[in-house]
Image (cartoon, rainbow, N blue to C red; front, side, top):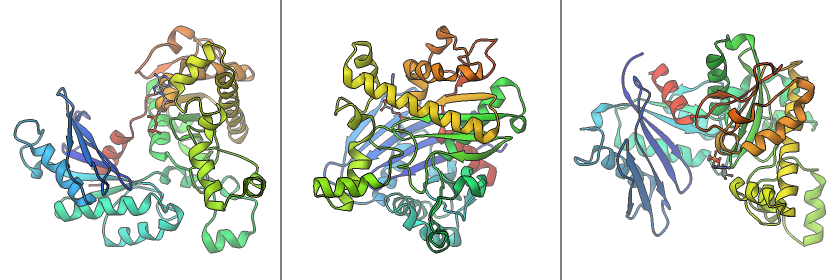
Length: 400
Ligand code: ADP
């Protein structure tokens, strides 16, 4: 593989995360975050590898200014990690929604920009921000090649029966309403890595990946291809998340609108921001560190929330065992999947029918790719820390 330094950008509407990755060593040379872009009190956080974290409060009226500050930090004579911008060989952009157009990462050109824009309708909060980030980079690094890596791409291999909803078909034809799924970069990275760690061929395995972070989704990967995933048209469907409801009876929306005298936008805001484990725990917390602590103290809100959360994960695992007619490996990843041993244990308690036996010593280790099932467990259960930035950098180098 060619050696280059790849700048990975994950641009939100008012924030921008970045990492500079060396493609040869696959090490992160520096990383950081711009926050409150376009809002008073903008701030950039920058951490070079092995160095101190710096916080600088400085105005960032727009994303171009944010990217300019990122590039300035990376080339700073004292704390920077490159001498000049010429050392940055390519930029990889995370793009949330690629619709049905993008089943793969692509080198960004005008045509691709227009196609991403056409997907704006499907992710009105995310895609426009991603495009702004791409445009800002183009302005400041006009000769550096750029690649778009889509959250939805990995899931484009789902069969029709997995991605269609039971709605009038004309809505699919007119508006492309269907399941797309998200976190694809993570599901792809983790499932491949699991096969690698086990020394097995990716194409021979049936893998279920539980990406449990603030947002959470499960995917079924059969013979190297995604065949189903729990998020849908938007990231609201599926598991119970930090503040998102996940699956509910759609009629609840109308019921609540009448009872609480709220409009559709207000109800959607409740489902996205006030529900999930935060709402279910009666506002105890959206953070699993607090919920685990509460569970151990027998706090009723924490117990209810942990049980309901884990039950939902186990139910999806069961559904995907059915979808794939079996499973070889179940992986846990992301903030909760990687850290919350109690969640993993509680989910695995439902998996006796798969012959799952958890090794509780292994289950309490952290930060490594590891099997947490015993040697005689019929199904292998693993923790694989995700690394979406590295996956984006790899895709970028592959395409340049
Ligand atoms: P995001 O979707 O924002 O990328 P992450 O994957 O970083 O989310 O996951 C964040 C969540 O991980 C936190 O809200 C918290 O619930 C959980 N988490 C992080 N560290 C721990 C820990 N040590 N123990 C239990 N849960 C943790």
